[in-house]
Image 1 (tube, one colour):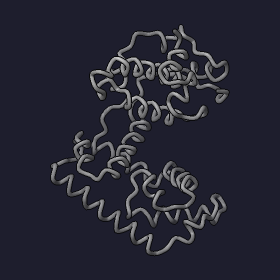
Image 2: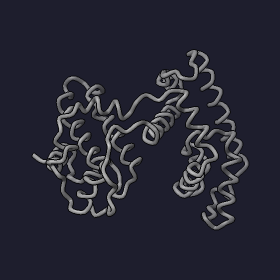
Image 3: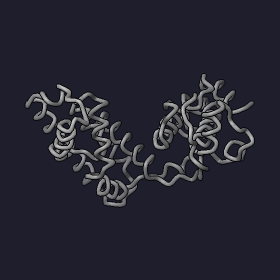
Image 4: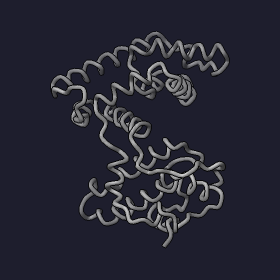
Length: 259
């Protein structure tokens, strides 16, 4: 049974992009994040013994799907012809997919986060992310501040300047939710941000975490549920952008998106 047939049987679709929950023109980072998100749901170490066999099969299929879409040449063949080269090494090779997953998504340490933050804040990448978040949430600053990586209440005035400058330059539309936001909403957001920052610092001190510690999961568990989800998304994004990729892809496809 070929990979597309396996996908259809295990996930109800033979579309590789849909298996990972991403669009056909997805970037490498989006494909990586999609793979991580879906594979976490079926990881053999995260399910009950009764479901382990089925989870293992799905996990292996997901690994092959990611291997195809992260390889430029194989993705190009799939995009242009709608087929998978079953004889390609990325598909047919006997691989330990759990080990491959561990290599792909290594643990992120406190030091990693600090190094990333130092490079990210003020960069063109951050500005692009801020503008995209503004468009995605139609100017809602609560959602923008939660979405932009590394942002705290102390960054809000800086982020506002970036957005106001882009609006004046007509790079972004002037959403009322942003231009007419009430002072009360701004104050409530600052109070919430200050409170969460104190909770995070108290948890870090309680656990005795230092820069370089790989015990971030313990810190996450000490935070409130909604913030835990946000931190998990942050770690996923960091891993997708900056963890080493063991898959050496070929040339990037020149054409994408026929599926």
